[in-house]
Image (cartoon, rainbow, N blue to C red; front, side, top):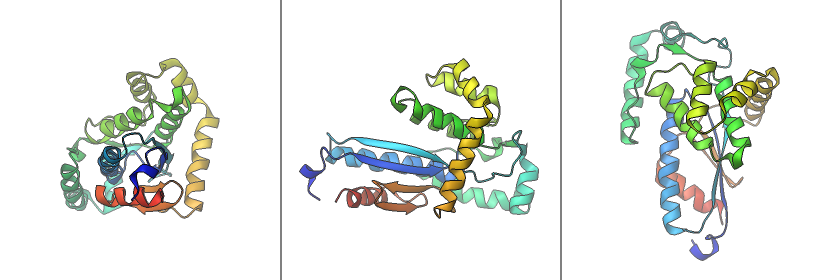
Length: 224
């Protein structure tokens, strides 16, 4: 690839994900690794990452549900889930993540969490968005926090530099949640059925938590 032609070309990465999707957390690490490599070759290049909502469990009540019952319904029981999550945990470790599935006690509805991400992207030039996304993933998969709780979300927002009172007001508005639900529906209508789903410069798309080298190749192809 002609490096000189890409040093000033912006790289936009649209990521459709859910913060309760372990592969999305792993995919985030792979994106970061690929971006680091791309920036080494293109130190003047601009990278813009935009997050889009996708709810793995859109029918969950807003107050969430018991994790054990959720696993019974989704996998046929905790043992089957444990077998599946063992493989995911191994992939997480390879990406530098220590996923604590046993620490998750309650399965959240993620509509408000997605609303928080959208709000973070809309203020202060979106500079808080990555920290918010990272903190949500960590809260759920590492710390065992219930990210369907308003106080938890506002606390995360405050930690990451957003105004707590304003965040609470935004997340409490029914119109805010309806907008996120509409965005989720729009993504599905466009054919996205699983996450993570990534689009590079509106040209090249990838499905799944592909290895960093695959993502780097997609970045390069999207700039041709």
